[in-house]
Image 1: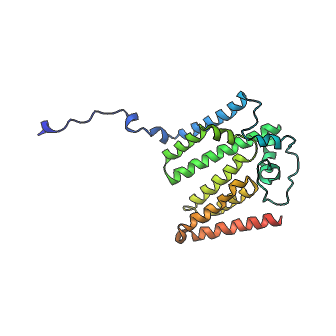
Image 2: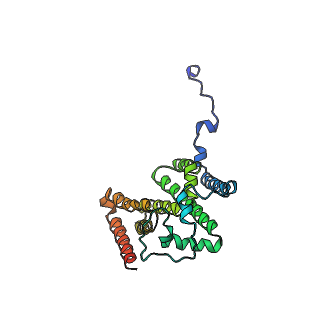
Image 3: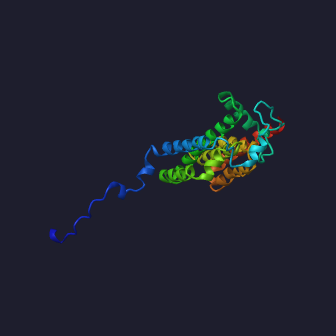
Amino acid sequence: MGKNLPSPAPSQPRSASNPVRLLRHPAAAPVLIGFFLLLTFGADLAWPSRKSYFATYTYAFKNFTVLHPVPTESFITPGGGGQEIYSPLYMGLLRIFYRMFPHRLTAMRALSIVAAVIGLYFLLLTVRRLYSPPEGVLLLFLLVTSPIYLESMRAFGYQSLSHLAVILTVYFTVSSRDRSGRAAAAAVAAFSTLALYVTARPAAAFPVLFYLLDWKKCWKRLILYLAVFAALVTAAGLA
């Protein structure tokens, strides 16, 4: 009977049998984020006079200095393009970077790149939690090789900081299924969008919709999120 058995299939190389093994490698994410940093700083060396993909920032910061006081009476700001000087969150972080890099444009560029890197990392964690590690690394690869994403995240202004606030809101909301206290962190991240680019503000509605989809298990998280968010908004309005 042994003669009638089908012959075993020829063994295949590991790379052919598991083509996504590189996406599961622990070093994949650090390498891709490092590649992002290499491209951002390489772009500065290749085009030293290039300010940003967003031409409006160049005009808005023509007479800009981090030493100016923030002209706002509240944490909630207009949030339009070129209005970064009204954001106490952005200006506060910019002053910190200015102490490390005492040059106006260098400090603004460094803040944008650092916020983008942190955002990429938490975006990776979010996708890995919702889907799988290979899909998270694949998304990371698509972003760090995208010219428009690369240019916009290294731009002057609070574009990348606004992206980071949205990503943190989503991450803490999703991870609060395991740790309920992170709903408060999601509220803080959502509240920070009120001092950043206006298009980031709809992220504040994401936790509400997320918790309502599983009301029976998440109603306490929803109450915590709304309570912290409302308290922060009230305090900002009274400041």
